[in-house]
Image 1 (cartoon, rainbow, N blue to C red):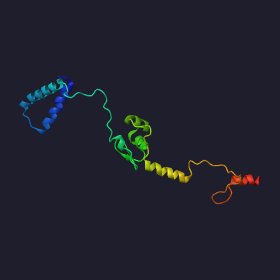
Image 2 (image 1 turned 90 degrees about the horizontal axis):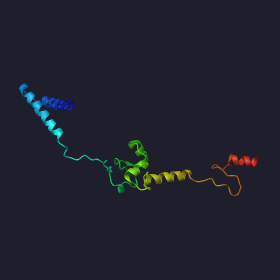
Image 3 (image 1 turned 45 degrees about the horizontal axis):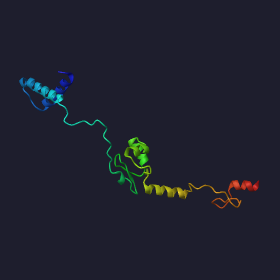
Image 4 (image 1 turned 180 degrees about the vertical axis):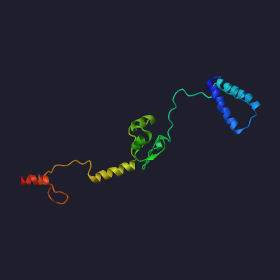
Length: 159
């Protein structure tokens, strides 16, 4: 017997003898039967064909149903998230581009929930982000929010 078969017989017999009492005279015959059964099982071909190619991933849900107004659904684990890019990086150690390639998603697939995007856009607009500073067309000094002229304009005036 080879070492693998001896180890397998020992494991099976140890488990069997923990639960049942066997007469010592029957023990040798029982070990022989277990060895014969394991040898026969090892000689048979598996009844199921093992896959040769990697199995394509199965999405948690259909890609069409992953975009809602309040959240996005991750195809990897079904998590409902507002920011998919952060979830992929933290939970799956994956970039958004890798995710899109893996699931064959379109180029314009969002990485942020639409409602969250609108909220951030509104906040940025209220803060004045994205607007360029327009030069004063009349050449007059600009006034600050308090109504006083800005220090830079005062320097021009005072010389």
